[in-house]
Length: 265
Image 1 (cartoon, rainbow, N blue to C red):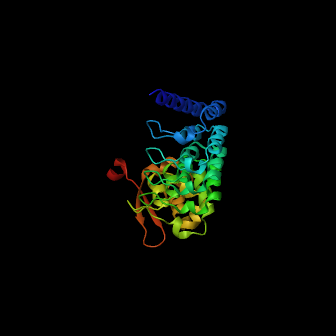
Image 2 (cartoon, rainbow, N blue to C red):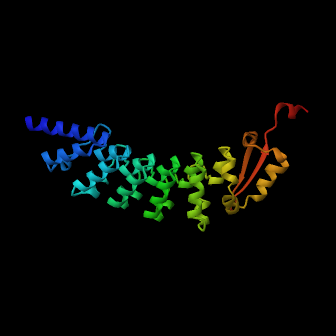
Image 3 (spheres, rainbow, N blue to C red):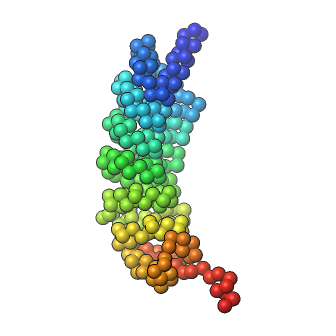
């Protein structure tokens, strides 16, 4: 019973140290019992001390956890109750150096999916963590092609979360892969262009590289010049409804929504 209390106390100190990034406490715990990290238990959320340290960006503590544990790469594989790894959490928060340390420990985690099918790259893209995106793609270039559970790509996520810079970067990384650029989700059959239009994100579909890929220069000229003239603004997109014809690559026809005054004129 006394031994159990000692171990519980040690775990509490370890979790407190991980939230504070206190390397001195970690080293002290390892001196008291070199097997401390081998006896790890998870907190109520299924998180290990490495999850907490990575999520808070405690670089030195993260490195010490990985180096102290003879199974460091295995520790990086532990998943919380949402099936997120420490790399998922560090990627979401944009802690570049922590992400690099976790990649060096086990770069295979770049492909591990959470309960929604998201890999660490998806988390970084949703938050617009550009430097993290670069690291993850450099470590595992093929991770950019990984889809979510319903078929959305990382490009779909960029549009959904309005991360234009991330979208530009990722499109540049796969600019020769037209099949991937034209990927449709399984739920609605939407490409990123359809999604951008429906979410009223005109800036996304105005990006020249995407315009070129989707052959929508005519579409832009039509909407900007014929519909709204030179005074086209982002909020004008809210005055449109969308008809999508995907029989070829991608073709989108937009028309104005008539107001009551228009209909009675």
